Image (tube, rainbow, N blue to C red; front, side, top):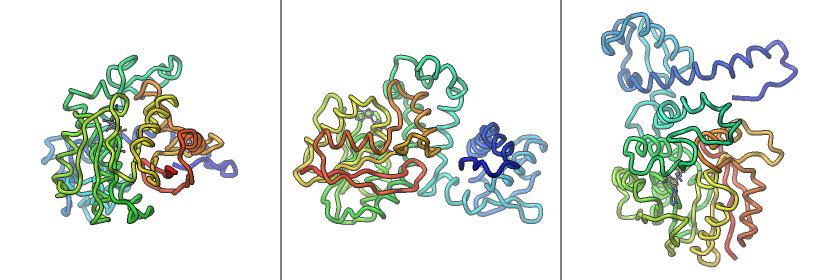
Length: 346
Ligand SMILES: C[S@@+](CC[C@H](N)C(=O)[O-])C[C@H]1O[C@@H](n2cnc3c(N)ncnc32)[C@H](O)[C@@H]1O
């Protein structure tokens, strides 16, 4: 989504239409993912009658859904048959390594309805997702296997993309072991370990998340090189032994004071010369965007009690306050990360 440029006056209401109807496109994609259409027609086409029979739905919605998906570039039509576009074949077929459907499913099942109460969230400064109000996001998920699964699969779908880009853009060859704090599914560790065959990695996270992490590490055949550590970054010390620590989509879940605590724990766990990497959708320093960072921040209003997406400058100030030096930026262009800040412990 790009910002409207004021010179394009004739396109003004088309731009507003795109924003206002955003949920039409979002729900079309989510329904197609839920009905597993992209798996159904992977590598082979289907016509309207065929879809209607396979899904046991009427011809009319089958036709509308296929046309809707084609209009969004998710399907392409040749003669009377619809096929996956290159985009859908790579990212929307369940089982593919960079499957993005986890994000689509979470947005739909977990966030779509709470987002319909955004006005209430804004007026009351109160989260709307899950049990809402005073219950925190992770208390909501812990112990509820379906919620935990939907959430962690979404993180995985996001983080295999940013993990791959991070491993390409940042030179990890100088490090021996990466620890991903609040590392979720282990996607970053998996991507980094794949690219750097001599590196080891560790995921520190809550026990309920780590059961899914262990599955993902095993599927990637990396159990020998990626360890898991159960614990809480609020009540436990972080394990030592890693010379680089990653915090991806962690600090946007919490308040500035909580973030300083987490960063201090990372500082204490690192050896001198070790580095911390913060990966987020960073808000620009003049607080005008970019779009995904700004809207992810509103998503933190819906999802968390005190989180928000912060600016490059805010993260930099906290890193400095905790004692990190030589802070540098590396820009990324992944769906859940537009960049990282890297700080070194002197
Ligand atoms: C938004 S997810 C990000 C996951 C992962 N870093 C990624 O980018 O894919 C936040 C993660 O923090 C973990 N988490 C929440 N509270 C935690 C705590 N107190 N201690 C350790 N991990 C925690 C959650 O279980 C979850 O995996």
